[in-house]
Image (cartoon, rainbow, N blue to C red):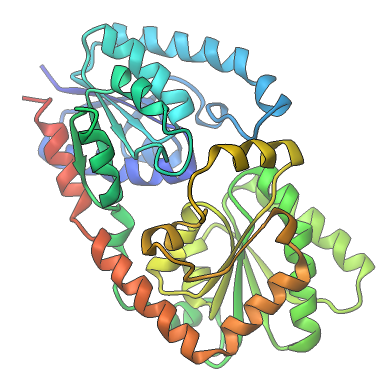
Length: 383
């Protein structure tokens, strides 16, 4: 009888890392079946989808979330019944803790082992979640070394597996190769702008980032801005904002909007302006000095401010345990402040050198041959 793995990933970053895991498992088990929820990369790796990938995420706080809850709870119950009926050897929840932990609890109760890949950020906010996690997961796989002790202290099986991107990215970035692919001169001043992977993020940050680019373009008209967007919806939303901005402003930045290719855009850049999230780690692995910015509704910010424990929100600063790169959040997410910070990173060679050294240390720490480690762990459930 062929082996069967159920797996659910709820966002683009989860789709990427899960697709590599599926590919690894298929090498050892050619007849293995994958069922669950995932994006285009997981589907390409052989996943049989049980539910639309883009309907799993809860975004924001307050009323925005409340409106989504009933339909998501119904979807989760239905999905749990489907997975339990399929009787997989193991269930893997990839990130998306708001959805996956409850799903894992139902599946674990049915006697199916549950592995959660990518720990919720209990070290940053809502530490009390670890008691709930213990009831939901058979095993936790963590991306960062400091996370494991938190689970060991609660007698939860845990493995530090490192971050898959750290294995995939070279320790030395290939900036000139990336520029050649994009038709950019080696001496050009290039800034990559990443306004986020969600419509809500692009909607909140696009105007701020466009105004920032205009300020820099006024001082340095030769600067080129690359804006990779992850899907058609975010690309269309950003372009709508951009064309509206261009209609009402004099100093227009040279801006290239891209469909995907965020790694290429960042690798070709001198510095990066990025919304807080996984992309901050990606920029660090590419050794790119960055400014991290983020803005949410007033209510969301009030809730977040009361629940978080750390001084930083960007993964590079959290992993380094110091303010390696600027974080301009909420009331500080202003175009003039962001522009000044980016200009400083463009021209302050001493600071750039220090940032690159710190990012190299982070990269080496996270290199753990992650995909092989995880595949070996999951393989234990397939015997």
